Length: 241
Image 1 (spheres, rainbow, N blue to C red):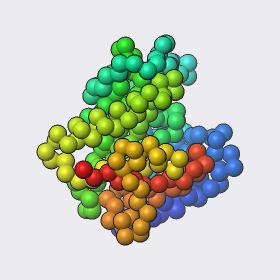
Image 2 (image 1 turned 135 degrees about the horizontal axis):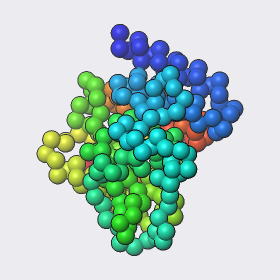
Image 3 (image 1 turned 90 degrees about the vertical axis):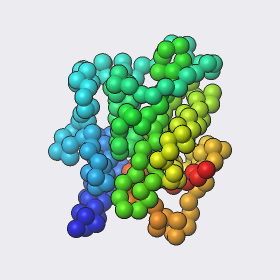
Image 4 (image 1 turned 180 degrees about the vertical axis):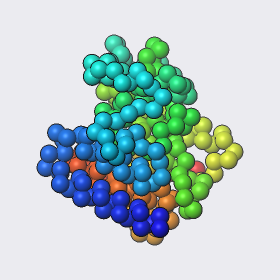
């Protein structure tokens, strides 16, 4: 029954996005709805209820403010350049910024649990974040997914994204219960970034057939959304110690 429901939701997603494909960049709410359908299909609680046209931020009343306030949450810190950067676990005060960044960039809304995030800071200003979240389903129970990687534009090219990934991987190693591989879904042009950090791209049907259930579904849905959002192919990568 679950498989049938998921297939129906994938069909709805494909139909919903294909109708809007020529105008998708002018209608990000359509793509946000598509990700909402994806989240429901994978068993996650979506940030956007399928019957609404605007995303809601759980536990963050401040994000119900006017558009000008929402833009302020994404403001670039003055003077954010290469230099000393610290990584720390995400806290409750980071939720509005993380959520609104993900919303504004039409990133995958799967599994937004602050306990899974690290935040990068420079001079007490937040300049990036990323997470490693667990997968769900009967396959790949010990696996995880690297996701939601973001660095503000003015601070890119300084190795902050790499530091976030390495910090998350190190934290996972230190947790004795985490033994499985770490996967990543990304756009094809980003493959080199991940391979330099020890990830390898998955090509074969055999490897794809044993993906964790939730990741396999997310990859299927993302393969529809990614070309509409960025005009690029979605690829799957895997990291193993």
